[in-house]
Image: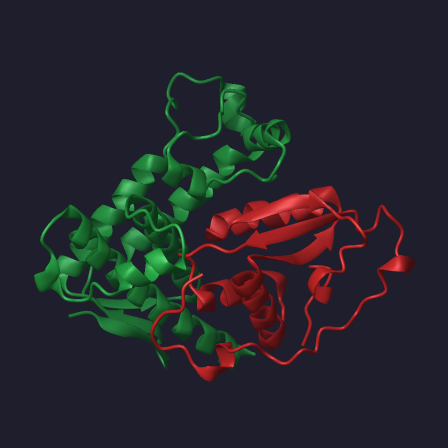
Length: 122
Length: 188
């Protein structure tokens, strides 16, 4: 991603408030797939955060945290769900111009401790 | 000179000179023509109706591949199958946003509803993705190198001209997204 002009301090890495969800309690059909967003040098950090907020309904701190994870680690799991759900998210992300793929969750998809990609938070 | 987008009482507003509007219009038209499916006249009516297109292949053009990426990283067969089901409607969705953005380029003063703003941000993003492929921007260092081109007197060849155009669209999109984020905040 690229950091452009006019970015305020609120796009710095936000506080580490991600909750560790107990994925062990969830059965396999509930969360077998992940939606992954990949870093690229073109998409603006502000735009990626805007997409996470407006499409998934994530709070600004959560959206910024995921965005920074994409930027620094090269990728981030931003939602979980059934194969059909994450595929639908992937098409929506492609519509926004984000580079998204889906993958089968391994080890409970604990990367980033992210949400389930549905419902509003905050 | 264009003025940055801002959020205020009238919604999201911006200002573009005629030459800038003309530039954006031609960039948008280029991306629309890239996205238009090759054969649309002589096709199977069922294909058109349900959007399923068995003739779809992964695009050979890098820029187009970036606009319409594979849905799986290491499974080309599954990605192709998914592409056959979804690519047509993704192309149409993108073309729709690009056309909507072009429609609000008729006057110097640009006033955007929330839906217009979303279409604009999508359209500008797709334009930038295509320009970035043409400029060979592969990593953050490439992006920074391009970013140093800020003065139109530096436009000596096609590449430097493209870099300046890219930086203009980047600046415009950044100001638009900041205004959209402000508008989201104030709407709660």
